[in-house]
Image (cartoon, rainbow, N blue to C red; front, side, top):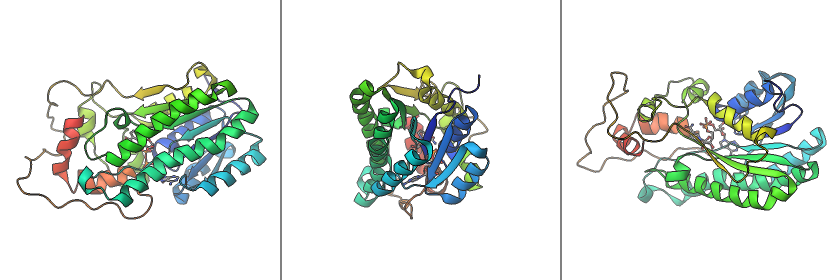
Length: 305
Ligand SMILES: NC(=O)c1ccc[n+]([C@@H]2O[C@H](COP(=O)([O-])OP(=O)(O)OC[C@H]3O[C@@H](n4cnc5c(N)ncnc54)[C@H](O)[C@@H]3O)[C@@H](O)[C@H]2O)c1
């Protein structure tokens, strides 16, 4: 079945790679006109160039209030309105609570939480003028249950779930539906493609009943459903895209496991430094700081998954 978004105009943030890029590909394939937004212009323009005449790229820092205003103004001028907003852009920060700097906390909240707020606030007037629309906000299973080392990330995602429900309650009368999607771990191959380096988070996939992480394309199918009219009676919902959570009992060690988890250190260990630069991708952080350089920290992930 094709054409499930035929003629609809969609904005997807954080679309230069990973989940956002997968959603853009799916939306275009289903007939949508898609504006891919990101701060990673090289990847964003490359991904967009692969999608033909129904896709456009625009530099948009979701934390920038003025940039949102001009983007939405231009979308209305160019397309005449907006039907779908996917607030997908997000960053992650792996740091123990007591070592999380205020600057790092605010950086994560600014992009994930404030970015989502601004996106909704600026896009809703267009949708109202259109007579309806669908907003999909990316959160995470860590935004449902929390996880060690994710204070800023989990806080921002819990907040997104909250504002999703408030917006759904306010906007239903305008035909605008607002839902959140909470994926479990998504196959990092999507990020590895962009990074040009392997990312092995197999330990997370080992802990869930299906024994593997999600593919971004699988989560994109859920985003498609929520963006389309097929989900016409869904609003304020929290859609979980994972495979049943943690399995009871210890994970079964397999020869494929990337490494053995060492015993807890007796002495305090040097901390991985927070990422440098304003827009450090979460998978890149995992690859460089968490999984490889701080394998002792994997115990936290083992307990959480
Ligand atoms: N990968 C996972 O396992 C996973 C699991 C659950 C939820 N999520 C959520 O899915 C979303 C996408 O994750 P992903 O794995 O594709 O991440 P990713 O790091 O591969 O991609 C995120 C994109 O957001 C962009 N971005 C960062 N800051 C931005 C800003 N200020 N303005 C605009 N764009 C910005 C990045 O440049 C990048 O292209 C995020 O909200 C994330 O929290 C991911």
